[in-house]
Picture (cartoon, rainbow, N blue to C red):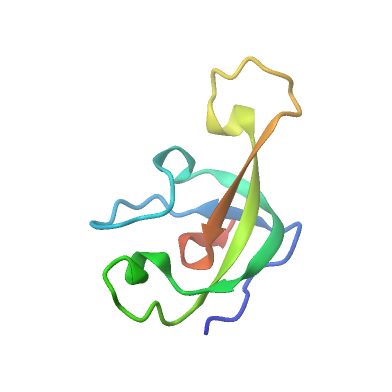
Length: 95
């Protein structure tokens, strides 16, 4: 099991990668910087489970908060608007 590497308030960048296969990280969020809102727990890696593998090592899953304007540069809503995405640890790095 992978130990949680981040805490609430940590700034993280989502990896900008395009691996083949079943991927749970949306395209629009890859390469973006956000803030850890909370750890949701530790679960089997869905990218492995999708192929009937063990899902090991289990990965921490985080709720990450992104400013809408940082995700979509043409966003015209309120400056404080955010989008929250749940992302597994192996997709995150310190920003």
